[in-house]
Length: 510
View 1 (tube, rainbow, N blue to C red):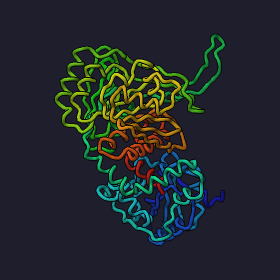
View 2: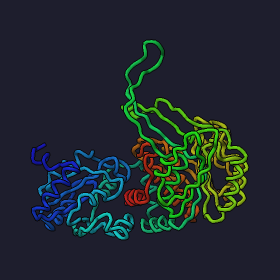
View 3: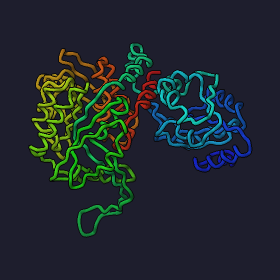
View 4: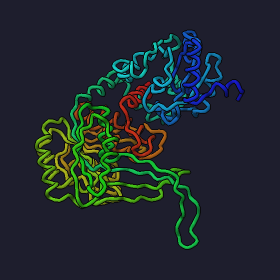
């Protein structure tokens, strides 16, 4: 790489310092921001137009981990993308940036002008509605937005048209789906979810990921010795589900169980989105549930897990308090979403109360290492919506080798559910209705970092879409899109956001 190109690429802190110095010298700063996966005529035209608006053009390139544009994206790794942009004569400085919060780097850099392609004006209005409308001043400070003219064929269109990002079956599905559902219609329906009132009840879990480096085998026993490196802590279980839903719906209430032994309540409250109303109940005979997973840092494989948990059912006093609260609150919600991990919160009496008083209720009974075989969906009757993975559905029906259609039909007969969704991993999902309809949606994931939390994300997006009255094929599609994004995230490190879903859908439907 030429020294001039290398000198153009700066860290964010160095770039901010450089920008401040240039501003003090009276220079006008223009910023462009994006993935820049392919350098095509539209990119060149955009950057040339942007450079004409000021003295210095800086380009912020989104890091690989925050690219949510669909299968196989980015095509090129972040270092190469940054170097490609830096090689263009129009560009003065390049910086690789995080994009967890869209355009956060713009707020930090404070350019005089922010340049974006005019071809994306309508997409931006829909996907980043708050950023470009309600909260423009917060995100973009006082900078002027310049919309560049030019070549409208995007990188995503080129990639989708000429590269095999999906198998042929999935491409046929997407072509057929996009002919019946436009992006504008889908985004409109997803934005309507904001008025849905959702009550989440379920087992809150704190997930800890402890990263280790293998040192060798112990000389005194058959044990592999690992060196601790670092760890991360996430709000999982019902906490994660509530966070997913709170990105879609303005009013979310969470009923969960904490332990008096070690509540971790401050961490939990700080981890929940501000529009979540937390209603905790407490047990005196155990801690708030913590699941510590020990992970090989080299290949990201899980070595083992330790659970800090009392998984006995809550006592009758706590159970009665929860039931009394449900009787007071449940009528005010459009959807009750039950996240049942089988860890002691959801008793038979609580289930009966939910069944009798909910307008609509959706349920997931998760099978995990702490409850295998003892937490089956068959304990529920007449749910509006069920969401299970394939092993959970087979365990509940005892149909180990039957095809998925027979498993789904049997479960509908047993539970009397209105809708049953079975997720099938790399094969997508299958949704069954009591009227006998069956919908199959293929998987949209192409990169898998961690499957933990993917089912929760699917459930969190599909269930509200169902409750809003979306067609079966549409809420199945949205659920699969959420799952595809969730497997790119380590555990429950962050929720899948609405803007990410919309960006992903916009890309794969091109």
